[in-house]
Structure formats: C-alpha cells, structure tokens
Length: 114
Length: 110
Image: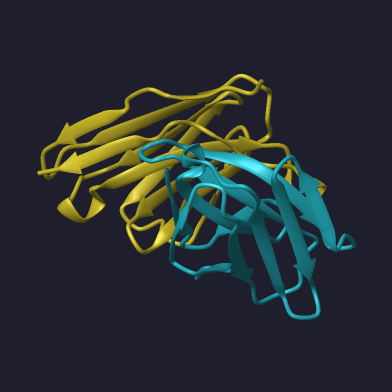
C-alpha cells in the first residue's frame, strides 16, 4: 500500500513565524500535492509538483512556497505565518492523473496560527 | 474555483437505509473520482469512473456518470454507522491536477 506521511498531526505557531510542513511518500510517485481544507470550502489546491524541482501554483498559492529536492519529499513553507492560514493541510501523491490514477493522501496537519 | 459540487451538503439517515450523493461539474472530463474522509483524517480513494463508463460498482458502492448532464452520483446501499464520513467528488484539471468539491457530510444513525 502507498503510504503518505505528514510529519506533524497538530502544529501551533505564532504569527510571523516561518513554518515548514513536511510530506514523504514511499511509492516513487511523480506527482505530489498540497491542499488546504476549510469548513464549507472543501479542498483547495495550494501547489503541486510533477517532478523533482518542478512546481506549479494551484488556486491559492499566495503566502506559501514549496520545495521538492527529492522525489519522495514535498515541503510546504509558510514564509510568515498569519492567522488566516490556520487550517487543515493535506498532502497527496499520485502518478499522473491524466492516466486515471487516484490520489493517496496523508492524514493531514492541523495548523493553528495564533 | 471548484470543478465539482456535491449535493446535498449534509445527509442524515438511519442504518440500513441507502444514501445518495450527487456531484455536478462544469467542463469535459476523462474520469471522475469519489473519496471518503473520516473526521480529522486524510481522504481515501473509493472509486474511479471513466468518461466512457456509465455505472461502476464496488461492494456496497454504486457510482453513475452522465456526461451529457455533467453529473455523477454515489449510492451507498444498506448503510452502516461506520459509513459516517464526508464524501467528495474530484475531477481532473489538465493532465496532473485533481480538483475537489466541498463535499457531502453523511451521518448514519444506529
């Protein structure tokens, strides 16, 4: 089974801090994704990466950056955390979805910015 | 913007009843996927239906796809309390991205 591991389940940070959310997958998937999930808004795509060092902005990239130095690891960076970034963050991986492949999700990181 | 939109937003039923959730989308797709999310956890893939398929089954799940109406439905038969979760449809955007709707919250009461 594919395993996607997010380094923290819960995280509390202060406004202005630099925050790193880490995600690792063990299936050699090309694609990795970061979504945020908020009540009533569903999942919104922040960034995705289709290969090492390659990235594309999703629908809500403002205030975030990403890093993919190795195929198995995809990091989401909040350069200066703000309270409106309090949310559930979900990482996922897949082979290219154009090939009709599903996403495999981690268990999420619930981030609170105070 | 969200590609898929689920309906209803919330559904409450008794154990043993069937649950039907609907999804509408806006652009042409080559597949549509349904996912389930238990409270506070990540999403789990349930079923994928290709654009040339009209119906697909997996255990107690039945998914239909009507490309002319740009809609899909997920039916859970003989529901159990353990089916309580949120259910999302998702459609591809471009070659690599998957876009999710806001989900349907299903509550199954014993």
